[in-house]
Length: 287
Ligand SMILES: CC(C)(COP(=O)(O)OP(=O)(O)OC[C@H]1O[C@@H](n2cnc3c(N)ncnc32)[C@H](O)[C@@H]1OP(=O)(O)O)[C@@H](O)C(=O)NCCC(=O)NCCS
Image (cartoon, rainbow, N blue to C red; front, side, top):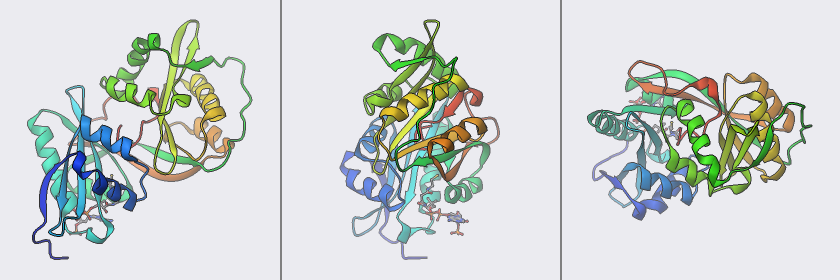
């Protein structure tokens, strides 16, 4: 273990953006400056800075709807791991959330899973990151697919009504921010004048990420087919483990498995929301 003397813990703000970006880049994560800016504005971050001024570790909490919060961006620079920094920030985040009556939720990488399980997080369901590196193999539209079109302002009440039971809380601020990040993936599927599903996405450091996607299977497939016509690769999609059929469809378009994530809840109990309504999550850092 290195000498950690002089390392100090502090709140994270915009002045730490360069250090935050260096942290996520060191783990080959996809967040760009827009992501960090949004998360730092809507959540609360804490970091550990070394005596030489290097930001060595981060952890954020993003509260959703007064019942739970995402623990996000738990990162430690590779050369400073196994010094207890993640555990220290995680314990501070859990104590903060518990004092506010918010259940801590986390989407764990395999490395993070080891730390979180020791700190009392339990597994619920999982999802897998799929990546498309070149042009997508075109999909043939199927009879019964709903009409897919860009989101308009008038669609928001129905989008929010679909998202809240699926995710488990209102996250309007996040969804509206995403709608402005990657307009070509901001789509709804419409059937009999009702919104049957929606898709959003965002730009990223390595790839554009599509998700969340909340819809049944036909609408989800139609939304993805439309997005793949206009979103330029590389593309990431975080698909729930449950959806083998949609996963097969993505593989037929050229997507390949990249890495697994586990949704974990602090203490016992199910994950918030209704997993059966979610096809793609927004991403492990957002829920
Ligand atoms: C996961 C990560 C945040 C852990 O940070 P860290 O500061 O090294 O973790 P800690 O020192 O607090 O580890 C506490 C304990 O967790 C376990 N642990 C931590 N990392 C582990 C790993 N890679 N494999 C197995 N066990 C691990 C160990 O029991 C460790 O105690 P020990 O060092 O006394 O054996 C860090 O490896 C990292 O940034 N990884 C890349 C990004 C990532 O995956 N983050 C998690 C997002 S969900």
